[in-house]
Amino acid sequence: MKIEEYLKAVEEKIKFWIDELGDEYISEIFSSIKSGKMVRSQLMFLISKDEKMVALSAVIELIHLASLLHDDVIDDAEQRRGVPSVHATEGSKVSIMLGDILYSKAFVELGSYSETIIKDIANGVVKLSMGEIADVNLSKEFNSDENLYLNMIYNKTASLIEVACRVSAIHSGKDGVKFGEYGKWLGMAFQIIDDILDIVSTSEELGKPAMNDFIEGKTTLPYIYLYKEAPHLREKVKSFHLKTLSEDEQEWIKEQFEESGSLEKAMDLAIEFSEKAIKNLEKENGELLDIVQNLIERKK
Ligand code: FPP
Ligand code: MG
Image 1: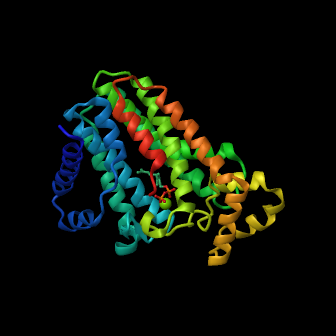
Image 2 (image 1 turned 30 degrees about the vertical axis):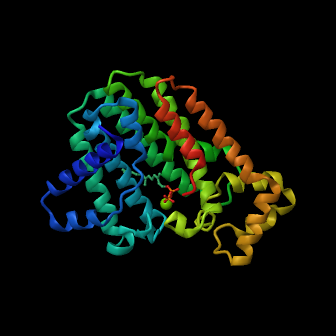
Image 3 (image 1 turned 90 degrees about the vertical axis):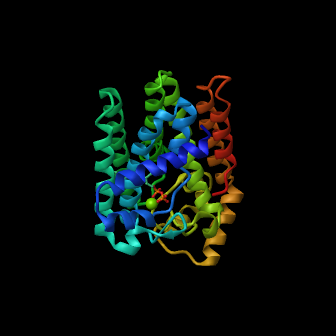
């Protein structure tokens, strides 16, 4: 089976489960959600090389989708993947409850797996939610603590990727520890690069407003490094926190990122983490190595 066929099968499985609920309205809003890159499913397939993993991938994708439906309410986001979010079209109440449905349906389907896998995934969702709370709380004020940021992105993003990799390894008789570590460090690099792209990419490329993290209060790694590297700019940078910036202000801050080398420093850490991910791979895992390479080179 080719990876494209596998991802299509995962999408079809999810659609089948949603339609099975027998509610036209739910099927309709669900079909308005644009597909993403399905990174977690790609990893699960490449680790297991087993088409029997389709349903478990569908479980992970449903949980991920549920978290995004909730996240768009929390972040008050109008757009997701280049189209209006469910939060924008149907309102926050529907977005939350559709998230609850997807999440619960995922756990109904997860019920037929082993206790190890169920507990691992359930713990992943606990971390995901703890990470989101940390993100919300850290966004209230300018955060200059790198460790708090790293801990938050581990929970918010890396934990579910780690779990997806580990359970697909375990379920296909491979090394859960190694592939879990691979997923963890890949997830860390993934989120740092996401945070860099918020600054360097255009809104068209991102499918959501660019330079938006800081407006939402999120002091991502490049901002933390800018604060560290340029003490004379601290007051001015802090004064931009949680504000909608003018074009000139955005340009100014982008210049400071360049001059201080803070974007580069953030990228260096992402590369360091991706190398930690690669260390867990064997020669025959070439495609998983490519995923790391594409992640580092991605533009959106
Ligand atoms: C996107 O982050 C959000 C996440 C990766 C996780 C959100 C997790 C929750 C809302 C908890 C979910 C709980 C359950 C029960 C499913 P972001 O806002 O940095 O990225 P974005 O720009 O893509 O929105
Ligand atoms: Mg968000």
